[in-house]
Length: 85
Image 1 (spheres, rainbow, N blue to C red):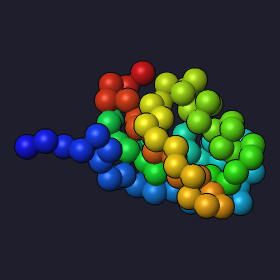
Image 2 (cartoon, helix red, strand yellow):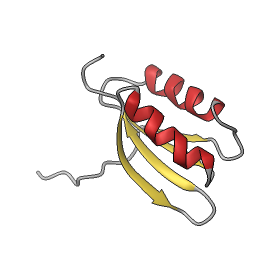
Image 3 (cartoon, rainbow, N blue to C red):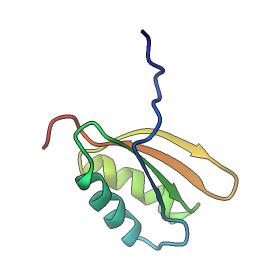
Image 4 (cartoon, rainbow, N blue to C red):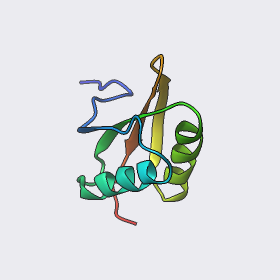
């Protein structure tokens, strides 16, 4: 059985309208509650949120798998590492 490269997210977080750095903090808190290897879909506004949050997550040790422009907002797929850091 072959899995697609992008699996469906285990959880979703709508942070449209949430300013920086609160959107990063909420994303990180949600990821920390997920099981290792869990995939989170985050919705972010254009501008500072989509410019800052993905970089901050990578620096915090999370894997950003996809960023999609959804016309008016961005969908970000972030995976919690399978091994706790």
